[in-house]
Length: 392
Image (cartoon, rainbow, N blue to C red; front, side):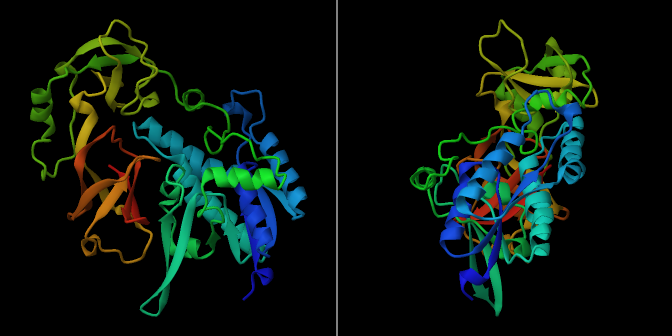
């Protein structure tokens, strides 16, 4: 089937990546339609006086006009609130660290947006992600693989770690084989106005609003103690069991009497493991980092210096029910070499995975910094993202 007979609906964000994705598809002869998703316009939780989506939608419209492709805006703000924003607040409220961008892709872009595109008789959707999809015949069935983008500095496969076979079968990543400077060069050479536009740094649904400001409008402030845990490796090991590399423990639980109170905070739910900013405590020899939070007792445990042993762990666990396989019927024992990352742009780390009765234990070759409950771990075989899960 020729590309000219295939319709592709592009998620146009108003940035250079989705602009070039649309341009490339048009050049390849696809029947291209551009849609901008209006995701958030709840003024009750928007501090900035600026309208975070209006400028982006205007840029997307100008690019669509330049490319002579149909353009429309769809309002998904209700679905965003139900599936992403409420989830995020609920996670922070109990001391977990969510990743709304991953849920945004799973629940909105590659679910609701995909269904909208299919209703418009689309064969595929496309986004400006730096990732790739490859298909192979396996036992008479076509299997789709999610692969890292060519530009390792911009690889966004981590954000797509919750996609499934059906979603991948209907998705194109037109710029996944390009590097960022190549994308900007294509945009510039073809008179696309977003060529030099800066990448978005805000939350996926509230634009330029910073996360702490956003959280404080829905989560109440509540004064609590900041407890300093001594920088003592033996003490830490005694309680953490980290010297037992194969120990099936759920990590370390701090107690108030293990340290001393050095200050106050405005709510444990505003902090996450590894956080440095926002503690506002002076007079220390080294910067303070959050080691743990207790939202029930409203206590933050901190350590002095980025090498504090409380920041590092060898292992983590994922409930079996929270492990998602990109490729169906995945068996980790079939892979000789596995790697993983727990955050975007983190270099891939070697891991071993052990299946227990109700969860997976994932061991790293090297200790990892700032592992927090609620984060996603993405697991790779070479450059194929094969699985992901929510950290407990």
